[in-house]
Image 1 (cartoon, rainbow, N blue to C red):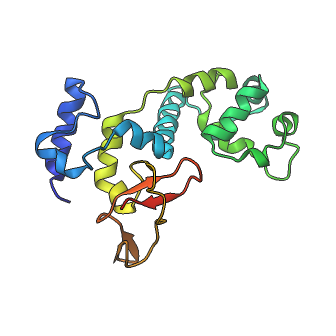
Image 2: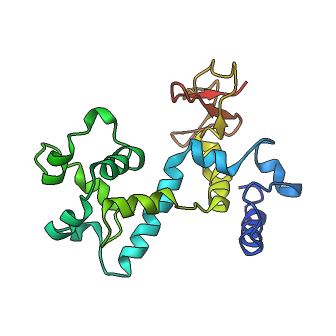
Length: 208
């Protein structure tokens, strides 16, 4: 892909220099929209941040030789310390809808048809309560340089929205067709266009 070697070199320099992930200028600027912000891109595409969170937690647990598969009754009892904390991890981080929240006691005791507890373990640091896990998640600082690079290497091709929609931009929904993308090996390449996400309906729209 265009200028990949240069971009990796830029990323390395940015990390060592400690510069802002939103500092896009000079030769590299042509690879991002003129109003691109890595922080806003991460906010709009929160799944990218969650990948980093889970990787970080997995690395911490690996130091204790623990994985989500090691969860036992003792650790479960420790984790389920407060309904508010568990529910926020359940909805905001794991991404489950409020409508399928089974109730604190049912979730804690596994007395439900589908065990929604297992996905939560990806956000659990061994030895923590849910409240401590939540504190870690809420204070997590993403690597915005990596997120910025993700847009150039993958996000733009996928047609990911890079910012929130402005007034009157929410007219044309993103669509997998020849009007908006190019078919490449049974996948769509949306890199010719820019997209935004509407905060009101959570839909992705073509930026005119």
